[in-house]
Length: 422
Ligand SMILES: Cc1ncc(COP(=O)(O)O)c(C=O)c1O
Image 1 (cartoon, rainbow, N blue to C red):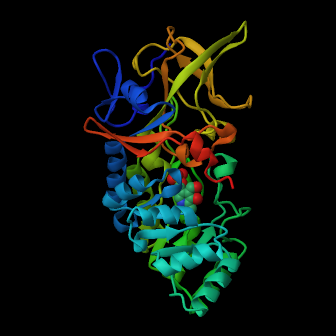
Image 2: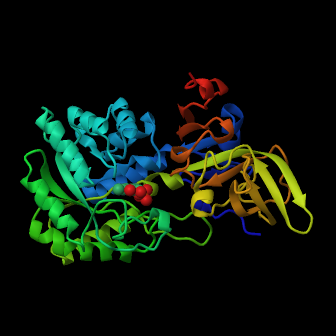
Image 3: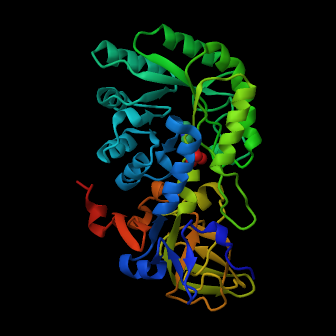
């Protein structure tokens, strides 16, 4: 029966006297009428607050993992708030540069950076490249030999720590496509090679153990494991990746960025690590800042089994339920605090039975076709993982603040779907 837990809503969420939800001073049902659905609504104040919290804790080492959500407005906001950006492809690099983020504030990631991606990164002068393989070092050496400037690099290591998270987003274990293994000696060899090369300047070590991690002890354990390797090297920087979890559903509680920072700093101090600490949170910055608005199109009762509530999006705007079995809450922003006695499955409009938005949703009893249905905590890995499956155009994105909504990504049109056909 329980209403939506208010802590899952963005920072500036308020409920009007009529029960309608306002975010950033904007009535979200009105936003749906104005901009159509599905629609991502980001609370700009929430984004800025999370960026500031990270900068307060890590200073220059605060870096936003752009993969969580990226468009020019987001890159510009993050930069304005003093964070650097971690970009994981030539495309993310392109968007960040197009937003006016200075190249030296960018960190280039990727386990298979192409020669073209590396060439552009070197040409524009990205701040750091996180070296992931010997093949990548070969490519950088060839580019520098051909006249490109030598980059500052971090060497990515896999500490052999298995974070308590979904296996698809675990990255710190030895059996990983990312980085150089610590236990096997591969990491030591890679650092030695890079330090001996005049094509790169090794400034630090990088490790990222996974994503959506709730247990701060996993991070502390990674620091402990890394310390024996990092301390003797005496390099000036240590990047501990992103991965801080967020609460998606009732009953979940995640540590704050400040709590995460305190545990990391303490673990580093205890381990004798004096390198400047940096982190790359993505989800913890953006996830809870946004909600997705859908329109309910059909309500189908399968007698004795369940009710299917179909909305006008689905796995194309939020593939996380399909990819990881992720859970979400659902509610009606016209009745934000209403009891939710009706148990339903919220599904998308795609031609897949697996196209589920919320497996076990609770919604108000008077749910009806035409209602605007919202899923909170969709600001990370939703729009950024969106597709045009079934040629469903990707949703628009608005940023709301002080009663104003700013369209930052327009809705894709049917003509956009033809744009790349030759
Ligand atoms: C290297 C690296 N840094 C940072 C992140 C961001 O992770 P999160 O969004 O969980 O904070 C990721 C995500 O997979 C990553 O691979």
